[in-house]
Image (cartoon, rainbow over all chains, first blue to last red; front, top):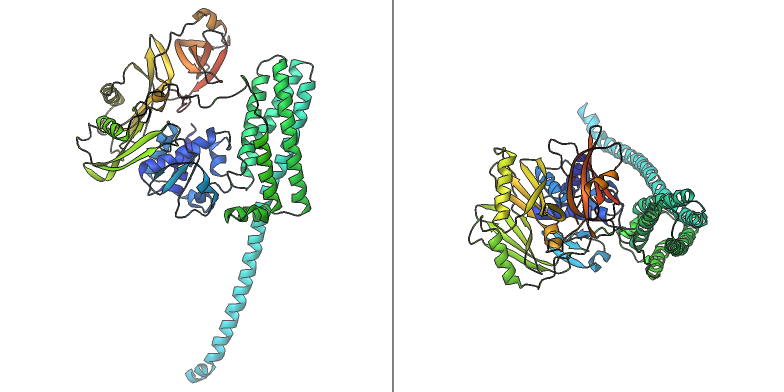
Length: 118
Length: 456
């Protein structure tokens, strides 16, 4: 794994899930990696992260904040195979989600504020 | 003098107000101009992605046609390679069209499968067989339909001057598709692909996630799972307070998830996940920020072995170590009769300040570790080595079981080879002699497998 990919994952974690339980942060990175591996999504970490309409933190610029140590620790676990999301490809925060469609995907579990979906 | 100004105050105020208003207006108009310029630039990138996608689909159709007409293996491979390249780029472009991540799932999946299939056929190195041709013919029919549909959308986009940034806004606000002809057309395309008859790819398939063959036991109850979870983290405390529990059925591995409060730290909790079928713990978090490292890796490794041994996890071979941030992640796999079983993976993360076990994951081990029949090779080491690239220096060889591209467990000779200063692993199938895979060892103090390469 390119160390720069780790930076991007840590940023995505920090932008999307800072303040969430640690395993919730690992889960966000795991979703990104699950997407890279999936046939349904782009094939590189950056193209998954930068896919239009995929991550709100990327759209609103929070992705450019500097991640903390916790985010890096979480990214490292995700890269090494930990996946608390149960193989999820989607997640959202029910309190801020605007899309109705997201509620229709099969629900796996909730960690902190995030619901993880297939 | 002051009275002079005071009498004019209303005038001065009025003129200031007018100046402010006029200034704001000009500033606002300037901002709007900048905004429109940026919006146009964004629009242009989306247009590019979409029109390129239309082109890619047309090219896939054309190159597949040429591949079926080719009379020589070389030309057939060139055409199949061209299809693969177009499919890959098309997938990237699909990812850049702002329709929302789920609205082009089937399209993305189709492109991935077609890419894998043609790459697999081309890798034969000979003319496509009769079955290959049959497969290519079916794929071509479907690719042609897709190309035609997207070309129709292209006509709409060009004819009606559709702006992708508008569609993006509609998707964000989740407006109904009938507001836009283009969104409706893409929905129809996705439905169309859904209706395609099921294709038999045979061996030309890339199985990313083999079925979890070891998770076949009876489902256990949540109460039993809780006991298993408590037992797993007994080192942390005897009567941990349970603060959350859920049953997770839709996950890849249906499981129970338990959260305990850490007895010494209110800000910290411990997560233990237990597989529903069979009751093995496959994931555990006990994380904190490590302080200054005081242990060396050997001592930390010993802690990892002790932790695993106390949980009946033995016959393990260390595959690699990843150190950083005050902790070390040790990756192990099952070893039996001198054969390494890479699917049966386990990882432990150890804090280097205290030797505490921070996290554990055994997805691979839980999914695949089971009694297996004997793996018997048919080819000896010398014959296998003869299949390697002759320019390589062989540093080591061992027998391993890995997944092949079709997701089957196969016995291989794993040759550690060097080429110049770079090290690689080359896997030669011990039964067929096929070169199954090549892995590059990342140059580190301790040569190790790249993280996640054998993750199921």
